[in-house]
Picture (cartoon, rainbow, N blue to C red):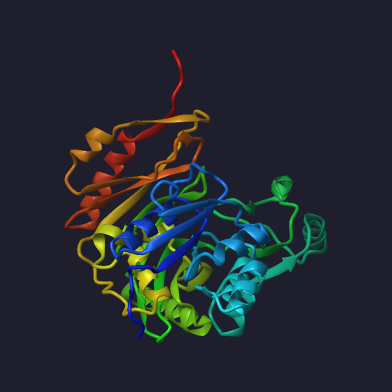
Length: 388
């Protein structure tokens, strides 16, 4: 096990969104020097990083030169120039999680093939190169309604997914290489965040339940712990642990699952980084997902994943009114509710369904936390400021 030397350890984070901001907040507790690479000089992490470098996470030279500045390089987004990461690794620079793992996760087709090769259950799928190929598959009868199209690379936060229920929906097809999945009859969607260090120690956070906003196709609520059966939760934790061990991943891996109407537990997809479904860990678990990620990539002992209190997290999303400087309503009233913890990401501009922050509600029971969460969602609104 390595020793943590904080006086001059330089941690590089590719992309400077809210996940990077919260990772830096944890790293600062250990005196770690933080570097952030992002194209946006006003990104959430820019003001709190020790050093901010403006540049694109998809540009080879930007990523390569940035990686040479730090002792260990990690990322808060999957969309990173892989060849730059591989070159850094070949030259002896530490990149965690490993670039080969990120390359596998980046491509949903390769990711699904990995699950099938290792006997991990997931929804049946078929790869297609274009929307024309998908239409041909429909005509030939190899694709049947309803189905889900997921672009192989670049999709996130509900983007890059098209749900095709009937013939009238084919206009929604996306013109990119994709996988087509049978539409699973889903009872619940859950997530398990697994963690691992180089020594091979593995721990899972409690299984959480994800409730989605049907309009934004984004997570609306995270419920911790989930209401699935103990057997289903144990299966999900077993699969998440198996995946992170097979990958030999250092850091954390968020694995999303479908619980079908017949009770099956199927892997949906995974992300090798801190994740929206892990935000309840900040207050309701002994060790947050951000601290655990640092422990994993620095090869430190993993922290306790024991639940302190049940909780519900709700995302604060930009309202449908349009874009503009963000104005918040209902924060003061929400803070008056016992157990409410508000996190604002510092994004100056709001736009429809943009993640502007989140609220975690702690309580002695999930039921009480859910009631308070509904109140918070009625109270907190984000609107663009407009001159009268």
